[in-house]
Image 1: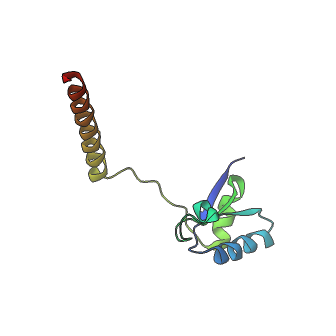
Image 2 (image 1 turned 135 degrees about the vertical axis):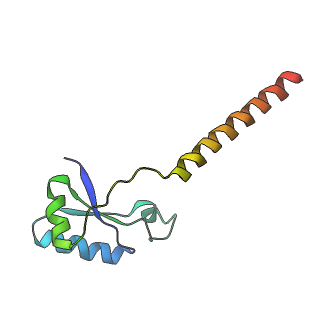
Image 3 (image 1 turned 45 degrees about the vertical axis):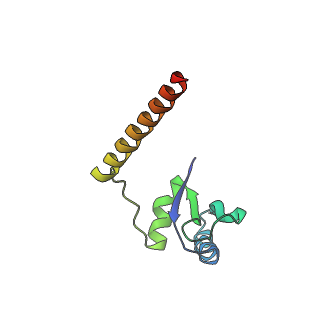
Amino acid sequence: MAEVPVAFPSDETTAEVVASRLRVDGIAARVDRGLYGSWQVPARGQVTVLVDERDAKQARRILGIKPREESPPSLFARLAVAVLVVALVVGLVAILLTVAAR
């Protein structure tokens, strides 16, 4: 089975406490340090507590956490992506025309 994230603490110590709490109730929990584990970025936003997807509902109940709801991208995000794609295409066309003109 796949692992799913159930908690997103802001530091490694808190993540280990959360994982420990889940292990006490028999749920195998793992702390994923993300890029923080390689000292590339600060811990904030990088540390995640993962459990087996079969145990996720019980883990969230124990921790008192509601699952994250998936939401579609906003209109602004969609427009931003469209503008970036158009800008890339215009840039590539300009490069190709410059090379062809030589």
